[in-house]
Image (cartoon, rainbow, N blue to C red; front, side, top):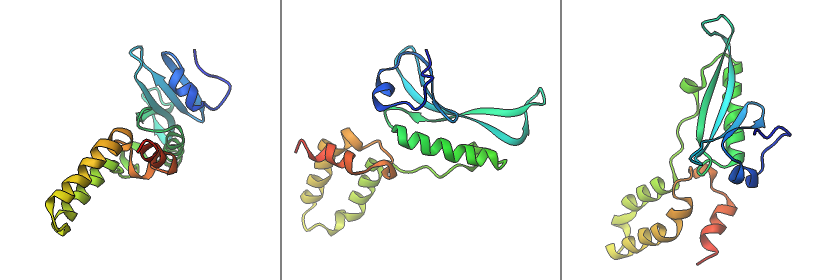
Length: 157
């Protein structure tokens, strides 16, 4: 059953059953029978027609709900709708992929390794991130990491 009354909440995103649940403005949370959750935005591309000659409406995947937080999904959906409204196809004109925290951390590790007096220090640095940070925020795009995510990593330590 779809959530009709407006915006979804974090609690609803985690608890809704299988189906296509609207957040409004063309953004949907799709929950598979397996429990997998993903964000989808439906946009009408200005000036483009489908086979029946009607405006081209297309669904664009925004990522899994475990990786893409609800606010990020709303922001991406808004950007996709703006591109579509201007006649651009979001799939081909969307923003560049943002690297994950783990990708950036491993890149920094490789670049900084020669600067440590002892290679063991570099290994300790990456091992600490692998133990504490990567399980919680490693797969998040770096632009999606804010104070709550940093606190989630640091609080248990």
